[in-house]
Length: 154
Image (cartoon, rainbow, N blue to C red; front, side, top):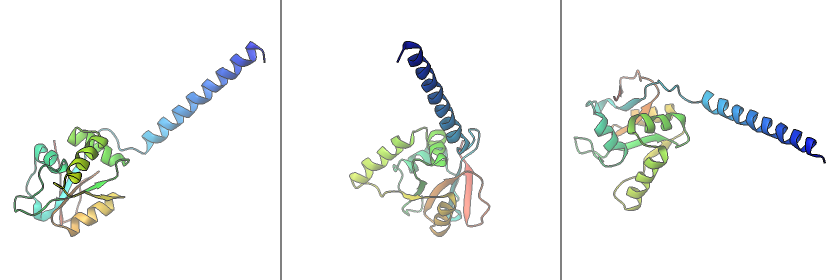
């Protein structure tokens, strides 16, 4: 093969890689939550006390394990690969999902905390929170349900 043919093949390969990278980028970003979307923290209406950002961070990092009434908090979260979970971690907790997982793993391994409940959809999360007065999670929009309390943490 002469040098001109090799260069043409290399240029063709680079174009294909660039197009594939562009396709993957567009595909991934098209299924994510808009950057300016708000994340709503959702708890059972029984636990309607207004929680501030520091309390939310303490609860989701498993440092605060009980509600003010002494009941054990149950975290309900989505899988680390979920765009909603990723945005919640980054925007609300100022952590990457893998950092939060490491915090959980350390506390679970030492026996000082119980693992969060992991769900596959927002609807599953809301259903669990509605049926468990000690559960807390998050959603991509305000929840209109008398049994649930939702608020944006700033």
